[in-house]
Image (cartoon, rainbow, N blue to C red; front, side, top):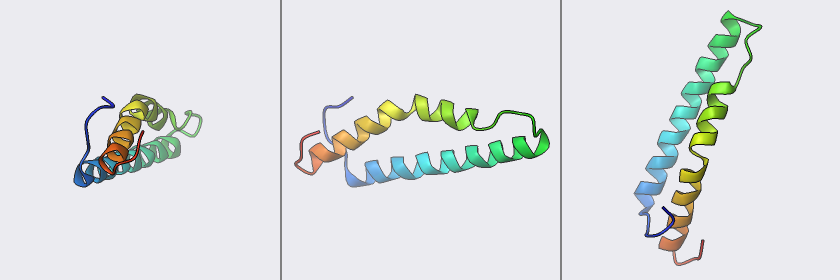
Length: 71
C-alpha cells in the first residue's frame, strides 16, 4: 500500500474524486438536516473520512516517493 510510485495524474484524480464525494455527502447531509432538524448531522461524511483516511495517506506517501522524497 505504501510501496511503489504514484503518477501525478493518479494522485490528483484521486483527490478530485474524493473531493466530489465529500461535497455530495455534505449536500445530502444538509438536505437531511433541513428535512428532519432533530437528526444528527455529519455522520455520513465522518464514516467516509474514517474509511478513506489510510488510503489517502498511502497515496500521498506514494506521491512523495515519486518526487524523490521519503514518506
